[in-house]
Image (cartoon, rainbow, N blue to C red; front, side):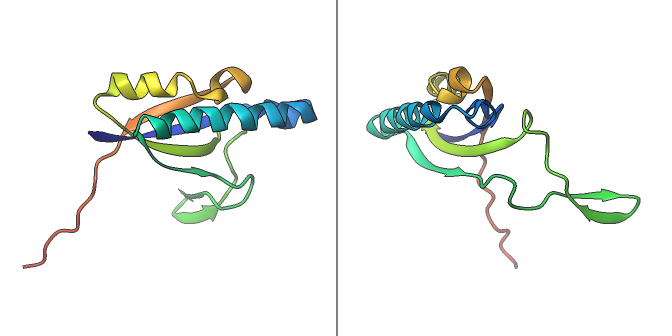
Length: 121
């Protein structure tokens, strides 16, 4: 089976609304979704990105500049790596991600290709 990266992003409604009850609902929904991926044997790994911690490098005018981050509505908040038999199957796994209905966010599904070192001869 191929590996797919699910890039989760979009609006952080839990932070903007300041609704403390939403955080527990989100955690419960994410854990349920994660457990379903594990039970199906398709879960590989996942990472949550620290909010506003890191750097974004770009080249402007021949110089490398640090920052700024993307706007929150564009930002990636975490990634999941799953295994699936096809892109359509990976999209079906992503459809149940809580970021879609709880945070009005998005999930971008990308095929991963392993990069192997070139043998020196």
